[in-house]
Length: 262
Ligand SMILES: [Fe+2]
Image (cartoon, rainbow, N blue to C red; front, side):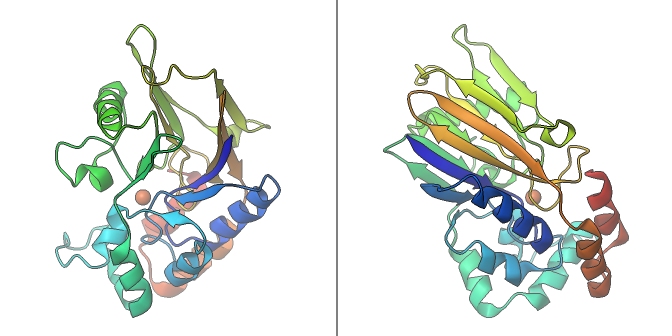
């Protein structure tokens, strides 16, 4: 059995990431810690978050990519935050962001990871294309198969979700809200016959959730004769992150949305 810790969309929110790591420590050890990208963007502490994911296998998300991309739409909130981050992030950390892969594959346990999607029609899809419905999930499940994987981890939407193909060929796509239940959401799948029934897992966002729950989200996945997926949400000091963002002059909308998880 292999045990994985999954985080995604940290978005420079140190308070949220520290809360997740503290909670996850109680459930370790893990064979692999996987960071699905967007370590930076939006939040106040990009360098600190990059340091905290030392020891993770990290992927490159669209915000990580934008740190070195000179083409930005003028004055949208995400781009204003990116401009601030370009000033804040150290040259060493910029090089680290630029070195990250867009796709990760584990051939032994046959899983793969990408920030956004496994739709391989164009390379940008790996870090830009959203999976938000059954149709998106189906395209991605096909891409996952062509990578030789039966389980795919992705982020980007900031919403915890699972998608899979059933024995009858139907696509199931379900979003979750672990912040609203007293216990973590747990889904267990029998030994897959998974070649035929691949599965996609989104752990939600550590640093800027959009599932109407302001908690920091992450997931634990155990892959063995059964596959168990545990989706978790933990509280953190939102006010402190917001204060740090105010001090940097971040757009008010980005500060406010942390309270509502939108
Ligand atoms: Fe993101």
